[in-house]
Image 1 (cartoon, helix red, strand yellow):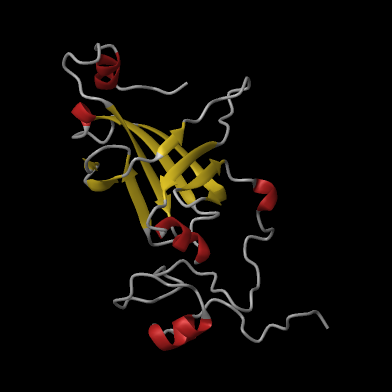
Image 2 (tube, rainbow, N blue to C red; image 1 turned 180 degrees about the vertical axis):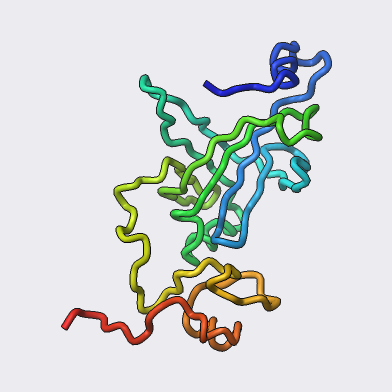
Length: 202
């Protein structure tokens, strides 16, 4: 069961149209390790927790719990008229990244504690000309690598600008490729993959 603050309970018990404004859905989607998309299901931008959430008339299927209390998957349908969301997917972003759905109230945006949050991992995506529908669910531990670190010939395993990565320059994103680390970042000595690894076992 989700716990509400006393201020949220008061707003929940207030009849619509008297004092309170509407409840607002906020979604937070990680494109990659360093870029986050924040949308508000609203006609205007929303500022919450010192962050700006861009107005977007996305559709939401709220999370629900099964009989055992486990949260099922939930979905977000983000507008895709300008093809921005498809571009992210084609670039290998969003999928398997973190996402979150927040429920806030317009009258309680000044306090970051007045929020109900569901978190998940983007496990699938479907695209049309108008919307990209993202399904979020719990992380599947069966898909985890054991051990946690694996050897890869082409993709850096470090989180961008982490201690292992060591890059402290002006670039704000990284596609984790060898050529980018070499020519754009001049950080090849910290590249976290193994380019000489053979494609097949001998």
